[in-house]
Image 1 (spheres, rainbow over the protein chains, first blue to last red):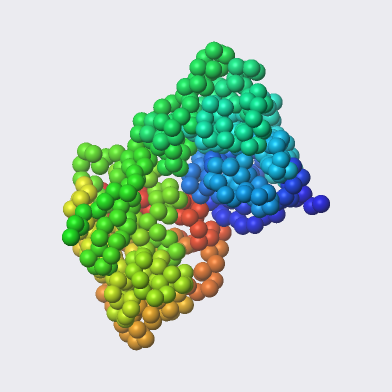
Image 2 (cartoon, rainbow over the protein chains, first blue to last red; image 1 turned 180 degrees about the vertical axis):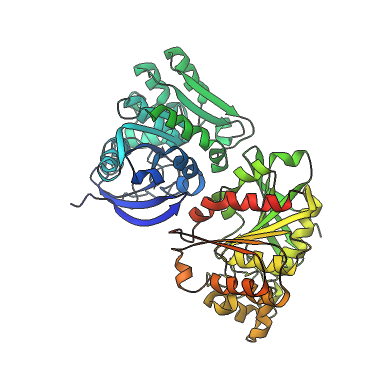
Length: 283
Length: 283
């Protein structure tokens, strides 16, 4: 099987290129999609790379189209990779029926319950297969990789970084779901993907992971105070902040007054996050 | 009839606010939509405003979501307004059948042919009704207004500015349709909206207007060299450049190597355009 990513479309952007790719995933047993921003410096040397994991309903395009990250990735010389948020068109019954389960809602876990388990292996897909593909086909420095994300993808970035400190050397998030075992979104997804035993969920809960395995690097989180999902207790940043304090993890949690959950919020602070990763990965 | 715009949603962005509005349009005889970016300075004083007219298939959201303009509007203290590109849900038969005619394709003309003429009055809507609403309900300095746009909206910005030099004091465009009477898109739209006499089209053709009425201010245009609509002779910037040269108009036409027609192109050069308008409108 040909595992090389295929370029679907390409757009020059801030002197570099935004490319959209598809590839046959062995992990998810089907076609997967991702986007890459190659800054101008990519033609000269191997670069640090930062992965961005998107939120519910998103695909590999939202971040590239709306975050404004390319301007700063070009300024600092970082490559960006934005994977899709789930497998698609798997044939699993009901995969497209609900916006917070199935298509667009992979939740960055390895499903253990059928029918999802046959395709929904997003955790292994991100940390193993996609990492390998990016290292093989793009000019990255594998020692300098970071990860960040938004909402469900902020959860994904945190659990990937916490569990793989040798792979990802920096992590940040926008409005992440930081305690999914206590959030309605997380409980629904984990029940369907992992089964009804909450013990099995803890491997995918950032607040639990901070307490159980700790983390030696700093973490940056931005959270809008007018985010409707904050009030609905989907995000629960204070549970994560308490866990970090208990575990001695250096968390910077910035509450941004009046910002909501949208990409207008992300765009407003993307420069800070890109610079944060660059400073962690520059050497 | 209540003509006040109604706020549909609001998003804090770069310290200001992106707001989406609807209102009952007397010109278009139905509900119209637009978006506004109020930078932080809007709470302190009346500001210059720049209108952005979008291209085919777009609505009032694309520019706000994808251009990255707010960062620079906040930096320089400019208000931004992005109207929708046509009336919608008018009941005109076939209004949604074609992507380059009807909904999303108003072409910034006052239609004279039925059934379009009943609602498709986008030229008067932009230069008269929307201008009046913005002046009445937002903190702008009416002496400092500019206009820019993309593709069909670049055409719109040019014709609005050329025909209303007292209203708009600055103009620029991304990949504009600069000679619509010679472009397939323009010919199709003008035939349906204005009828088969090309003489009536010249009031809406930037290249013809430059020759017939001239223009005393400089014009900035960015055009990607890999724009597929350049090769298809939809945009025809050289016809406009020749007209400007003949008429003594100070056109800066920048050909941007390898850029295409997308918002990745617009985002890459939006700072230059915002600064261009700011420099023209600052005093």
